Length: 263
Image 1 (tube, one colour):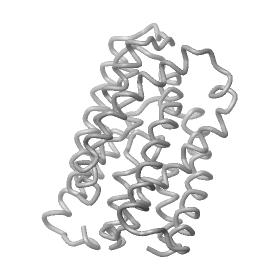
Image 2 (spheres, helix red, strand yellow):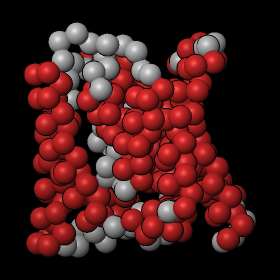
Image 3 (cartoon, one colour):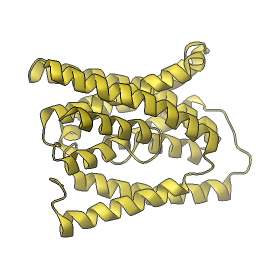
């Protein structure tokens, strides 16, 4: 991996982390096209570069994050607990999927169809949007989030869909998804850095530079994305169609155009 690739992946992460289109999936496909997916540092980078994006959440929502009542933090904990347990015990399986672009493409396609169906259900069945997220709703959101351990599914998509299916206001759903990203991605990044350092090799100076550069870029692009998402987004249908088109294209590429890079 070089510095240009670090910047490009950082941009992809910052843009896609908070959209329901899977940042990990996009980075896996991009890294595959670049021919760097099989590099050990790329596997680490794809997870740890998300830390820059969650720093943008902490910065933009610092007042809402740090000056809340206890029940807010309990709901975040309840929603984070399931994915923490599953992620810890299924770590080897998750790592297996990190270099499988075909799985990502299939997840993008299926996820796009689910988003379109969810939007139809939401618009048809819910007229009075309830803003409250109860403890039970938080737990259900946490269970849905476990599906995002498969690259290409999208953590933000699963959490927002879970909110919408429980009649939570769209903006509240988006914000809760933002807040959930802090403990979930923070834990995943720390674990990945720990495993890389103790199981493989100490970090080289260039690897540290690549990780820092990517995180800085994802932090900046993440802030831009969050502001756009909360201000202009009316529904998720566009993302559903985008996922279907992208997933279909790369599934076809897997069988007919292969290899694209090392896709």
